[in-house]
Amino acid sequence: MANIEIRPVRTESEKRIFLTFPWKIFKDDPFWVPPLLPERQKAIDPEHSAFLKRGVAEFFIAWRNGEPVGTICAAEDPPTNAMRGKKECVFGFFDYIEDQDVFRALIECASDWGRTRGLQELYGPWNLDYEDSYGVLVEGRDRPPALMCGHTPEYYPPFMDNYGFEKARPQNVALGAEIAETPQIQRMARVAERIRKKGWITIRNADFNRPEDEIDNLYELLNTALAHLEDHIGWQRESVAAMVEPFMQIADPELILFADVRGETVGFLPGLPDLNEIFTHVNGLRTPWNYLQLLWRMKTQKIHNLTIKSVLVLPEYWNTGVGILLFDELVKRAMAKGYTWTDLSITSIDNPNTIILAEHMGAEIYKRWQIYRLDI
Image (cartoon, rainbow, N blue to C red):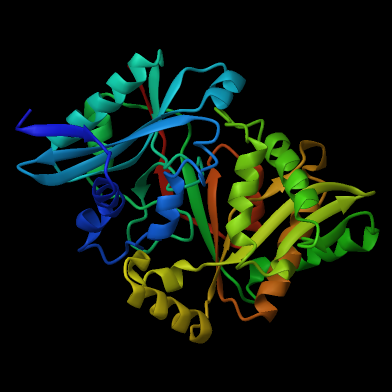
């Protein structure tokens, strides 16, 4: 196949080539935000990866004439497959030059790997963590992605379609809204005030002094509030803990909100500073100099964008005002802290409750991603 050779990653040198390959693909893309190399290293390290503590993965590089031209990861997640009644081969770290032969060689490699393990379909892409670099970007390449969101070249969707991949689930989207005294936000505040006066819903900060209790609350909400979604992937508790841990270092607890009703936690809305505003300038921390750049920018650069990574309300509390109160409180606090814009990413287009809540504050869709599956 056009002198393309697929080889598994074995040496430290090959591991670095695998992890830094996106720099080759995106070097001329002004909207790409380089991923943090230390975080990518953890994602494929069995000692640090939550996925690899419960599953197995192998990493491959496509070579042509001695040059790397693509990468892919093939993985099996036995607990999630058992929970979902599936035999899926997860694929990710999927980057390649604009060449159909390279694309085909990588997909055939992942398919062969999955078949040898008795798996029946490819499912992805995402980088092992189901929230990391989710899917293929199909709309919205005119602005940088927010924290944790994927960014792919425009040739990726047609390559997936032409090979025979099917859309695995409805699209996921990012919405954006101005944080200001807009008519929509003022109207939301009036509705929230009527709900607040009833006094039965309490909005509180996350308690960082009780991280295990809050992780339990989040674990329950993730697996209950989203269970209605088509093709929902249930969460493992260790994955929730691994996701939360790095954000404990950067999060402002006054912007990580829970809703309680009679002592039960029924809702969650986290606002995080969109550190991609800084990460876009530090080259993924590939060199010691980049660490100095990061320290300087963290001390001196004001972050204007807030990113909301999840909106969770237990089903029995939908349409009760819990979501409105969470959004209103977060907007008030964010505005007081000087944030001027918020990203809400990423939510499924078939999750109307979240989108309706976002629209209450004037949010509009500005990016879309697609997850695919292929019978192997």
